[in-house]
Image 1: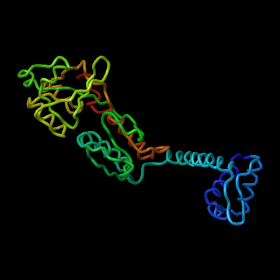
Image 2 (image 1 turned 90 degrees about the horizontal axis):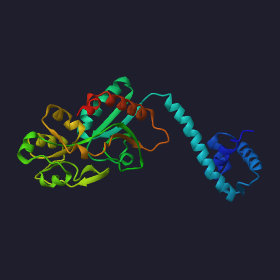
Image 3 (image 1 turned 120 degrees about the horizontal axis):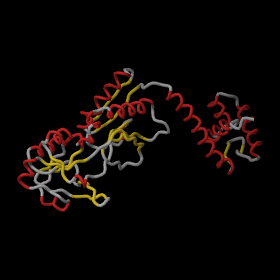
Image 4 (image 1 turned 30 degrees about the vertical axis):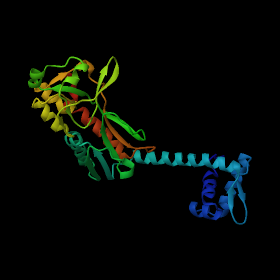
Length: 300
C-alpha cells in the first residue's frame, strides 16, 4: 500500500471545496477522487470530509490532517524542484546589489567573469551604500559588509573583513600617537558612514563615538583625508592595506582592533537557493579567496 495514496486528492478537495473542481485540477475523474478519499478515510479510521449535495467541508480530524498534508506535499514538491535545479545551469535575470566601492573593486569583476562562463544569464547590478529591501525591491542577492541586522535573510560568508584605526605619519608627528582608547577623545577623527567606531577591550566590544572637524560618506574620501594628515580614521582592510604596506598610514591600537566581521552574500529565504544564486556565491567565494588582498592580510 502506498501511504501517499489519496493525499493529493484530499488536499485538492479541501482547497477547492468540491470533488468536481478537485478532479479538474488533478485531471482525473470525480469518481477517482471520491474513491481515493474513501480509501484514505478507511485507512485512517477517521472521517475527513462532510459531504452534502451543495458543499464539501472538513471535519475536525480533516482540518488537522489537512494542515499536515499541505506541508508534506510542499516538501515533496520542493525536493523534486531542488533536484531539478541542482542539475540545471544559471539562466534568466539575476538582480543583485552591493556597496559602491567594494562592488566596483571586488564584486563586479568576479560577476563579469561568471557571466563569461554563463552567457545565457542576464545580470542587473545596483551599487549603493543603502541596505535595500531585497524582497520588496525584487533582488535575488546582496553583498553586505560588516555585521548583519536583518535575520529574515539567508547569509553566506564569502570573505573576511578587518577594520583598522590609522593615521598618517605627519599627523602623528604633530599630535602624538594614541596608546589607549581613552586618548582617542583628544584626537581629530575623520568620520565616514558610521557614527560609532567599534574596538575590543578586555575581550568585549567597546563602542566609541568619534568627533572631529571632517565628515564624508565616502570611504575613498576618508582615506584621502587621512593620507593628507587631517586626523585618525577607521576603515576596512581593502581601503588601507596598500597605504599601510608602503608606510603612508600607520596602524594604531592594534591590541584593541575589533574582531573581524565579514563580507556576506545574503538572499531572501527559499527552501533551496536558485542555481544562479548558489553558483554565483560559490564563484565569489573562490574569486575573493584568490585576490592578493585576502592572501596578504596576515602580513599587515
